[in-house]
Length: 152
Image (cartoon, rainbow, N blue to C red; front, side, top):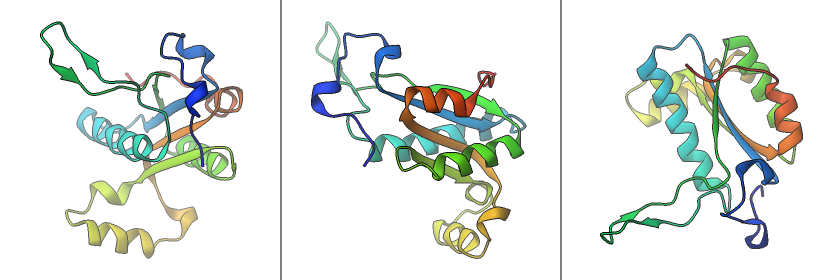
């Protein structure tokens, strides 16, 4: 299980001191709406699966609650399709990384069962990805994503 233990969570520290780093890498060729959808969907899967990723809820001066956000940050990067596939394969090969991905089939089907069937009928090496979310130890994640640009 990848995540933060209770004693590691320091919401008063800069994000760069967190042991784990979270990146979402999106296909740079997607139009803005599809890119946002891909990033959000992989982030949703990640925030559900990685313990301690979300910080405390914020309460404004009027008493309204704003749900907790990632206290350790999240960087959204862009890559071409082949780089995205490589990042996903390398990240998935590491036991100390959590990976959530969005195969292209997710945006080409309207029924979740159709998505499951499409992915189930496709060899792993032939899947195209629109986004990959990775959480893992800071230095290895930095090496994995290299100098990819921010999604623009």
